[in-house]
Length: 294
Length: 296
Figure 1 (cartoon, helix red, strand yellow):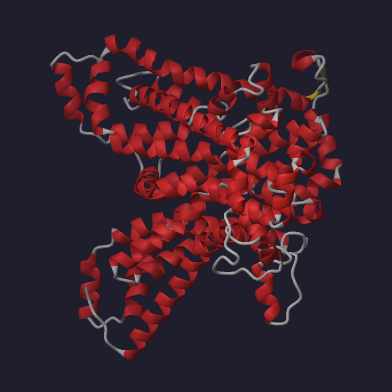
Figure 2: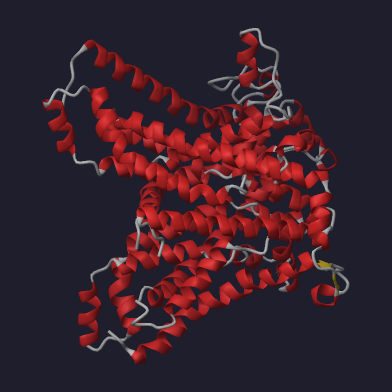
């Protein structure tokens, strides 16, 4: 690459790096601040003295979370939801994308199904009809309402379908010569080659289901059925003062809601922070895959 | 290769997805009929009285709904602009830095907020921008009065746009990074040999190769003009900013599911869906015509 040594270009590059660093800091500081608050003493936080590092270091917020049964129940519901959604999405999308990746010469009704999917992706009945449907299907307070309620992930089907279409045709043709049927071709030849795109849609699914909170607010009538994000949304404003015993009341006096909330927020994003470095490349791939024409 | 024998296998493969589609995508569309009915939950959708366009007429008489449509378009348009221009500028800036370790680390950090849910981001934002939060503490050092960022109706829409850009700009820049890495480095070398300065190379090589991508993305985002971001505003707003911060989706939620005006809320939601569908169809047609872009 070309090197420039003039003073102006040095200034230009230096300023550029400085600005990038400021922007990057602006992205991470709010998250860092949340961690810092969750580890600080309540009164110091309330006095507005906590900025970049914890003051009056304490783990009492986390101790309260450990004793909070509902937090764990919600955490577990989120884990189950993500687990089932991931498995179902994997198989449904894989199976659906294969026939749709055929040309309309090889599979005549292909375009009809394709337009049906596109229509369903772009048009929805809206919130109220959705809720009525969930009710009439008996999915109120059911985890299956959360797993399936979002509808068929059409975008993922299209992503995988486009990937299949870009695989070399010869692979399949020679398999047909050898007498392999559609199932053998899909599971034995195409699937092993498609792991990158399958990983991408799994990552989309995991993050999407982990973060989704609103459907649960609608279909769960009992708080104990909330997944984690809905639970966080529900409690972040209020601590139920009628339900705490003397021991936790004493602890509350050394800690504001703010520190406890910060701790809850931090714990609920922890799983994503941990897997994020592994997910990043698949997300990037998905974005660039989705943007190239099929 | 025509393979008739494969047809039945293809149908079997499509079946699970089509069942999913039927129950959770198509069935809710039947509920759209509520928009044309005086819906009575006791009678159900079929037996409720047909009232034609009454719900729609009523909607246009409400002051609320006009305000809500205005707010939605205002916030959505600003977001579309902010989420196009900010990532573009950021990608160009980062592209000027040649240290791979540095650019990779920066990318990893700026993508991160995209992965957090709005529940979490709103929790964090409300915290750092609260009346006694760190931002107001810093402002106080410069002698400024504390600002109620999320309770002031004049500031609220801008905070919504700002926090959305904060969350999404890094991730949105990915597509520009991809476009930038596909530029042939020989072009830069040739330009440098001809004496083009770093700035000139940015202006005449880098910029022209990302502008088409930006135009394409801008076109595709047109369909979002009525999508101001329910998840975000639902977690950030409060009654004191309804006048500027209430959008179609949040209004539909309160009217339909809290106040039980099912017919009216469905009508508003339907109008939004139809307009959105038309806009998306237009934007994708444009993208196909002029950039040969297709999603399938």
